Image (cartoon, rainbow, N blue to C red; front, side):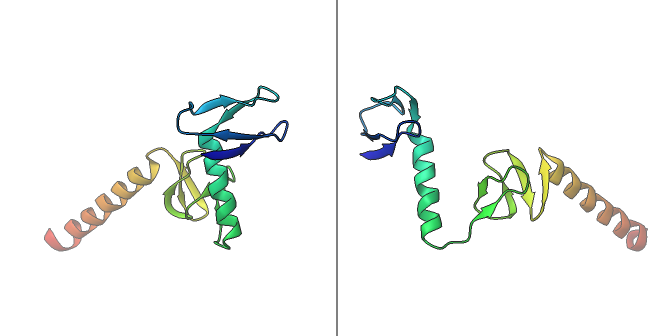
Amino acid sequence: MIVMKCPKCGRKVVWDDFQPMDIKCPGCRADLNVRTSLRESIERRRLQSGEKIHYCPRCKGIVPRRWFTRCPKCRYWLFGPVTFHGNWPFVIGISVIYLIFALYYAMFVR
């Protein structure tokens, strides 16, 4: 069982395993999602435990770390303060590897 608080009216709603994941508040009939409530609960616990919180530089969403990860909110790849969308980090990585092998071939093999 999970106790959630309605963001509109502040009423506490109890959810158990036999209910659907999307429910309505019995007071104001606002839509409540159990998954988002669980994520918010985990973030609150993380803040209380004193663990350092990392934020995405693009959307300011909470991310587990700042290096070599993907933001769950905006889906951008994070490399410290730099963000890339889609497959750009992999394309750049493959290009750099190709250039290194081309230089190696030009200097030593040829």
